Length: 258
Ligand SMILES: O=C(O)CCC(=O)C(=O)O
Image (cartoon, rainbow, N blue to C red):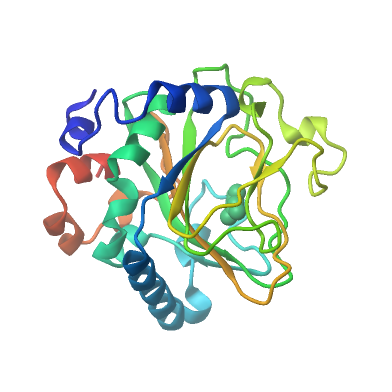
């Protein structure tokens, strides 16, 4: 294990053999509830404060990135660069179980790509089934891996994420295979789980948002990682603030690769 992962508490057995096998086979893994109800309440308050403060500008960092093709999404609230917006978000890229899952997919040389918030607003949220990479990659040559942190209970009704298990290994891209990427896929599964749950998914697994048919926002944070030899979605060196550098451990700074 790389030193910085070890220092952050990642061990060979941080994920069980069964969990690793499930992730290999299906391209995703539910890690259980990693955030307490108190943490969830505190995080939701900070998110609301940022949405109020940033208003129309919210998520502007996405538009500044050349690695994000669709920075704006109708009916979705977005916030970006959470790394520099409150210490409450430190856990999202230093939690040993998340790092162990990402390291299992990408190998030990990994870094944070972006830490963003996405909420599917009532009536919106359906996305194309997609992968987060522009081309097919060989199995075991994965470049990107995501973790979704549920800030609300996810259900089939409120715009939970969908995934087509095993597609990270099929050597096919959804845009080449599907007539309608927006349509429900016969084999898709919906992540239904309580708030506080974290689900890792290999970003080469076909996935996407679904429509929120309730009257409340469906909120989540995406802690998105890439291999160390790949560009970050949000250039962490460009945005890092002195107070973030002072606050974080050397190992956490390594995860940001700044
Ligand atoms: O928030 C979700 O449910 C999935 C979001 C996603 O895959 C994306 O924005 O690319």
